[in-house]
Amino acid sequence: MNHFASSENIGAVVSIRGGIVDIRFDDVLPSIYSILHTGKDFNVTIEVLTQLDSRHVRGIALTGTEGVCRGMRVNDSGNPLRAPVGKAILSRMFDVFGNPIDRLGPLQDVEWRSVHQPPPPFARRSTHSEIFETGIKIIDLL
Figure 1: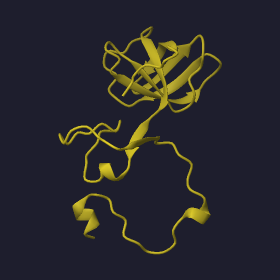
Figure 2: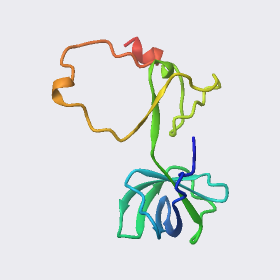
Figure 3: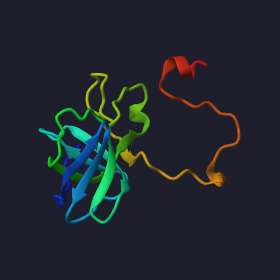
């Protein structure tokens, strides 16, 4: 997945308290649910939870924050956290970022959607009993 926004929206860490990180952006404030990357190799991923004011956002680290310090550069990806959807993900294992961890190779023929979706309207919800295929054999047998 691309860790950098095409517009290069760059900020800096203002404070860090455990997994909560405050970041200052001088140009464009990232939207809520945007994914940010920081750290020595940009391997620390942060999801924006709130916009504190016109220059600051507060986010939660989705990975460990070891090595992150005040003043460290932060890149806005411009995208929300996404997950793969489709038949190709059945029986596969993923990390929190949707990357396969089952050593079965890369995903093919999948659509990536934001994990923050509005619920379907009541008219589209099913009210009858049906088999819900999860791809997890022990659960599918129940």
